[in-house]
Amino acid sequence: MKLDFSVHGYMYESGIDCLRDSFTAAAKGIQDKLREETEAWEACLQSGEYAEQLQYAEDGSTLFDPADVYDYKMEALQEAYTQLRKAFAITIYHYWERKIRIFGKLQNGNHEKLSEVAAKLGIEIPPEFARVHRLANALKHNNAGTVNKLHEEWREVSGVLFRAEGDRDWYSGIELTDDHIYHLLDLTKRAGPSVRKPIRSPLADTTP
Image (tube, rainbow, N blue to C red):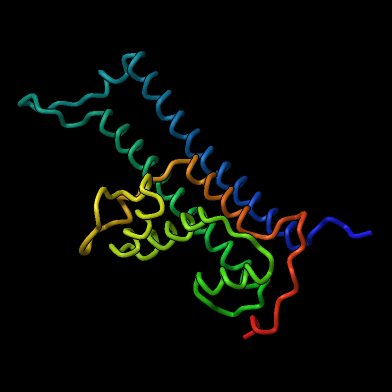
């Protein structure tokens, strides 16, 4: 009796699930901190502490405003949240890249080569997986060329309306939400071996 189970698929999908749980936990940590700071600020306003903490110069200008501190804290937390999403977007693609190299017994190779090897292993990569690849490249290389390729595949997150040109901080313009990260995880799970479908043995011509 043939078992409908793949060790490679189990390991691969378990890794994706681990990344998902890790992102959820990290995101929750920042969300909790944002909520705590907001609740503390609202309590400060309601209690009258805000007015007591305000400090003015002799000419009436403001020397210290607690609202500025609150704004700085919220800005720092939102920036951390943004960077968390982008770091996970890169990690998700690298996870796929590393696993395909291992399964295909490749020491190196670009995305096209890895995709060819995946096909030989019987892994069907969905066309939408190009989003994962192009996003990771745009975030890593931060140049107009990679941003334009991302724009072709996923305009929703590219951060540009038209063709990007010249040197700029394109990285900062890329906008991701939590839902985008979960979408990337779903695509990446589909782009690897399935727990229910064993991969084929690596072919000789895939060995360095």
